[in-house]
Image 1 (cartoon, rainbow, N blue to C red):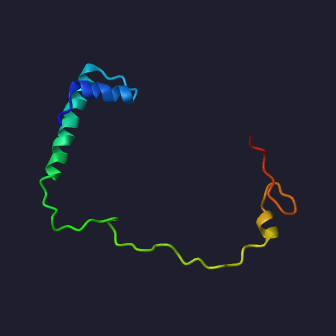
Image 2: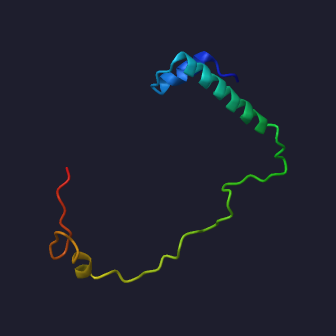
Image 3: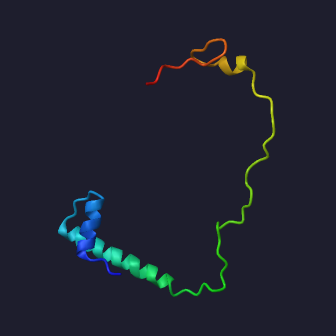
Length: 94
């Protein structure tokens, strides 16, 4: 597929871009070069390559979920700029 001048203009309109004539020609040339390069990838023999769901062999990278004591409420609230006996007080957000 070749990128035409009209296609560049259409893409620019979709992106709400105003392009000058020299920019349209520049992007047309660059987009065609990108498509030619991607077309080269179709020539690579991948018949002996297994499909991957992820490029790294990481299986389960999560830590164990262990129950632990939390910090006491008084300690959590002691550095709060404003608090009640049980809660942090914050400005109303509406």
